Length: 289
Ligand code: KIV
Image (cartoon, rainbow, N blue to C red):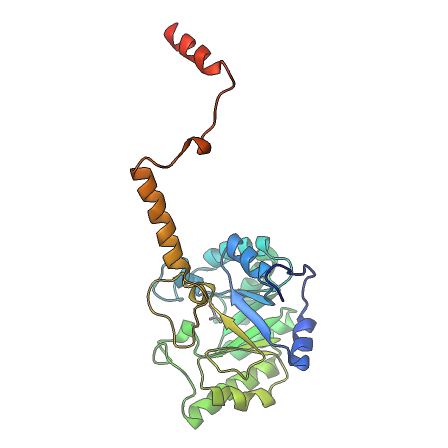
């Protein structure tokens, strides 16, 4: 679809299953505020995730762990205001769902009621399958996340590919199957060898979205700042940069700074004028004081 012709009918979960059945790749991307939501909407993506990657890309934390529910809600509400067609997924941050089913449901309900998300995403971890089942039973559509799960990256040995041995791959597959059995609507698979995704796909009935998981998944997700080159520093191996907005932005701000310092900006065309005679009257008023 052309970037200039985004349709406005809101997608439904069933549309994702239909795309999967038709072999039509599903496009998912992150967004974190109103302008980025408007950009991804105009580009015609299917699913928008307000990822807890916002902790690093937007808020400057050094991992996803510190971001709070309130910080995520503020960003998610802004994205909601910029979207019409894509499904919106809210990422439940670390510490906001693991401790009990009641806590998980209460947190997810805040994302639905306050930020208008269509689904919530939770990462793989000790209690995740139980929490996923509880959320689904409470009528909340859930996205599971297996493979590399940044909220528990320390326990996984750091930010590295998962499932690289047959046994480790089976563990990723078992996580995925357990989440499907718990009723999740969609699964994100992050940073696993392509062979693991290829082995997983025939075992699952739900749409699978890959990130660093090869080309066999039903769709792909990338982080907005990674794919547009907004983020300074290196990116993961699976990231492809489609633009270099950081360089363009630095160049733009530096040109502005130069023009201010050189007295070029603002020019007469950027200013306001008074109606005829008002400047003379003002001088008289000042002189008469
Ligand atoms: O937080 C995030 O952006 C994510 C994606 C990388 C899937 O979880």
